[in-house]
Structures are given as C-alpha cells and as structure tokens.
Length: 566
Image (tube, rainbow, N blue to C red; front, side, top):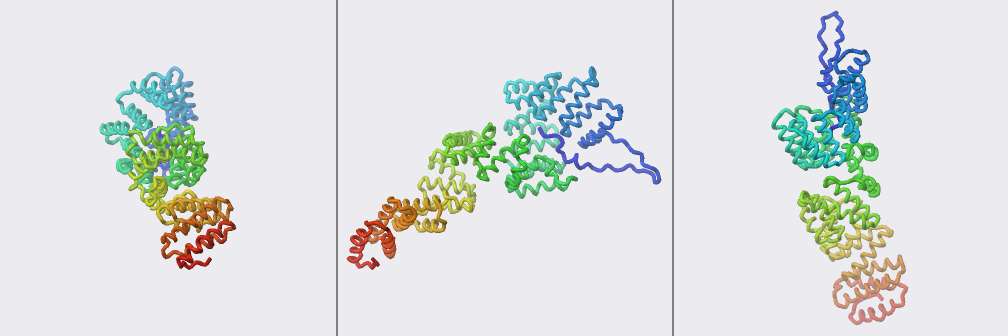
C-alpha cells in the first residue's frame, strides 16, 4: 500500500486564474469548492475548508465523512479515525454502516493489523471489506484466512488490483504483471497501471523494460515522486549512483519547498543508497519500521564498515522471503563466522547460500551461481567453487571482490598461475594491504617459480607480527619448492627475530640445499648466492657452522676451483 499524501501536486498547486473584475470594483471573495480540492489531490486545502465549515456550523451533507476521507488521504490516519468516531456519534442511526471498514483502512495504514481486522468485522460484507481482510491476513501470515478471502474476490478492477498487490508482496511478480496487463487492456488510460507493471519488471531485474514502460506514465505526470523515484532506481541498477541522483533533481526543481529530499522518507533512504552509504547512520535507523529495505541497507553499511556484529544484530531475526534477503543473511553469518571462528555461523551461511543456489528459479542466474560458489567455498571444495566462478567470470572482469575470491580458490586448487593473475588484478588498496591477500600472493609467486617477487613483497613491509608470519610462510614454501636461497634468507631473518632452534634447522637445511645445487651445477652464473649463504651461516652462533663451512663447503670449493671468500 502506498503511503497517502506523497504526490508532489499537493505541495505545488496550480495557481487558479483570478476572476476578472470591472475596474474600480472590489472583487467578491469566492468560497473555494471542495470538489476542486479533491480533484487536485489538495487534501490540506480540503481539510482547511471542511474544518472551517465545521467550526462555523455550516450545513454540508456528510461533512464529517468528507473530512475523515481528506485526513486519510493526507496521511493523518489517527485524525481520520477520530473523525469517523465523531460521525458515528453525531449521525447515530443514520450513519454510514461502512464506517467500521473505513476505520479499518486507517488502522491498516498505521500497521495495526489486528485492530484493522477486528474493526472490519463490524462492517457489513462488501468488496472493500474482503480486500482489507485479504491484506490483513497476508500481513499476519494467516494462509487459511487468505484463501478464504481470495475466494470472495470478484473480477472488479479494485479486487483485481488488490489481488495483484498481494502477488507483488509475495514476490510473485510475473503473476502480478499478468493481472496488471489484463486491466490495462480494458482501460488504456489507467496510467497508474504502467507504474505497477514497471515495478514488477524492476523486481524481475528487467530495468530497461521498466524504464520503457514507466515513460508512458511520466509523460502524463512528470513530477510524480513514485514514478521519478522508480526511474532513478532503475538508473542506479543500470549505471551508478550519480546517474540515479541526477534523475531525482526534477523533483527538487518542481517543488516549492526548500528541500524535498528531507521531507520524504523514501527519497532520503534512496539518496543514502545512491551515495554509497553516506549519512546511513543518521538516516536509516529511524526508517527501519517504515521502509523494509532500510534494514537491509543498514546491514550492508555495517558490512562495508567492517562491523559484522552490528549487521548480525539487525538481521538475525529477519525471516528471508526473497533471494536477496537469503543472500544478505548468508553473507552476514559468513562474515561473523570468519571473524569469531564460529562453525555454527559458517554452517548456517553455507546452508543459506545453498538454498538460493540450488533453487530452480536462481540456479542459472549470476547471484545463484555466486551462492553455490560461496557454499562450496565454505565447505572448502575448491574444485567445485571454480566450476561456478569460471561460468560467470566474463561478467566480473574488473571486480575486486570476484578477483579476490577467484584467486584464492585457484590457489587452493593449486592453479597458482591463474591465481596470481587474478590477485594482481585487485586494485583496492585496502584489500592489497591485508595479510590474507599478501600471503596468498606470495605463495603464488613461490609456487609459480618467482620467489624473488615474494621476497620483494616482504621487503616492502614494516616489521610487524604480520610481516613475521609472512616471512615464515615464504621460508617454508620456498623450502618446499626447492628455492633454497630465498628460504635460507627468510629463515635467517626469522632466527634473528626469534632464536627458535626450528629456524636454525630451517636455515641450515636451506643452506645445504643451495650448496647441493652448486654441486649439481644448477646455480650456473649465480655462484654469488653460495657466497651469500656462507656469509649468512658465519653470522650464526652455532657450533655446526664450522663443520658445514670449513669441512664441507670450503674443501669442495677448493677442489672445484670455485672462488669463495671463506
């Protein structure tokens, strides 16, 4: 249900032409006409006129009913309820028997669904009562009541619009579109139907189709907040936030108020999204119970600011209804699980991703395949991860998040050349500075036969716990791959930082490995590396150095006429 009173026309009324008066004569004050106010959706004007007549005790048939009607459409639901109560007291036996269902509509707009249902039951049967009970049953997740009311619906335009709205709210967008299209065939000038159809296509991710259909409505009502906002959202999906914000400027230009964006919850919310989370903490929390997407976007904001615990608090009680909600909840559980080491959270994330990725409607979509990749990633089945990521790789050529995950998956599956290429495509400086990124990139360098690049990566870092851990990884991986020179250098630095016997053993083994390559003639023109290894050994305070250098390396060098400064 759209929130009443959002039309821009109520803010900027067309100036009525003043009646022509003969020169020298005073113009007679002409009383405004109620129907003019209602026709122009100027409910503030209608309320002002009716309240004046009420205080002046002027006679107007059904004055209180018209006043309650105007309050409702202006969004003053509580005042509308009070006015309907006054009408019941004043007219008593002659009151409209449908007043309870009108009050029920007010309660529905106030999100008081139980009160709306109870009030509607007091009214005689009518199409409006059926529609209202249909919608309250949906809000209360009462499937049996929904079915009962569904059977009472007729083929009238209003009933069919109510049914289409339910289909839309239940994410059955194609079914809703079919109803709207049938109604549009019957009445081509029911322009609002174009907006409803555009909403459905937007939800189906056909943003260009939504824009095309929306234009027919915007030709008639170029300053409609709902339509212009939908157009902006479509531009956001197709292009970027700046393009979307540009579309909203037409509303500010048409508004007579200072800043229309501050006056409308929906526009405030969407500006936060278009501006990539700017002012999210100030704008979104008050909107959590008004705009459903506000909660999801605040969750995304906390994820982007590396606050998974805050994101979890917002989403833990959310029951997902559409794929995006399942995906977002899965991402939050995965982020929190990785942060805290909670296997339960990681398992829940894996199950949420699998629900989406294995569903018939999503299995062949890009988000669906991303979900299956994430599911297998958490299960550490990297060969399966790559099956899904490779199928969507062309769509993410310059996406840092994709290249990060693809690179790690390739490395975990021992395809280090492909992994190195993917990781080097990551451009985000924050990502490139993380230990996880550096460690995987160094491993790819080592495993791809480029240990010097791994060493250079370490050399650029300041001395920290992370650089120590990176050095430990380089030392062991180089030893494993036979890059003994760089392994020896790494173990030497490790031993100087921490005199652990294990590091001496690693350095000794790597030094022997360099010597072995020299004996086998594999050092070629790089005999200076053997000299550097000898120098490294000389700096060690260990009795085994003399045996290695003086009793093994020195005699061999002398015998083979290798010039070494020993």
